[in-house]
Image (cartoon, rainbow, N blue to C red; front, side, top):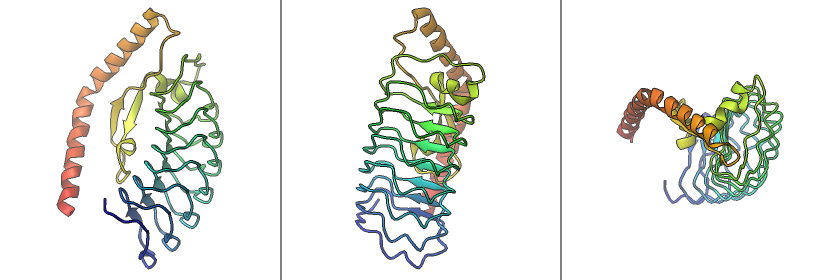
Length: 248
């Protein structure tokens, strides 16, 4: 990061595809109107309070606004090609205004103030959803998400896990006992995600001790089977870091 407080001087870079303005002091999104070919944009870890100034970036596929001061999801409806949206670590209390983003496959809203799962009905291509560390008390709102494979709900106020009907294993049942952490969750989505195991826990108070033991044993078996894969993923990440550091 730098000490950039204002986005300016980029108007003529009309062929620009990737832009990283993370870890600065930017308070307002502006000066990007001419960057119509932009596909990847990260303005994470800044001081942004309002989402605006993005409506002309219709080619955008990945948008990272994690760790800002945003209170409301808005002004994103024009981004029809958006595939990954990260709004974790803000002050968002409601999931809203995402109906037009039907190309989304990855959505991160972790570490906010969300109390209810709603507004996801049209996102039928969604594969990965992170709602960890919010104020959610009830699991619902996934009925129209047939492609959902990863669901993160750790750190909420959920007291019981509802019955999962037949055919829901690929939808959201798998996510309750086990999720997979993607590279996008850990940092800026610069390259395709690495897959590494990351357990997803919800409070188990209503379950019997026998059921809890069975679930924990299953989780243990999954983790043991993936240890080799974790080592490979770590090696790949280390190589990628080394490559990027050489370019600096």
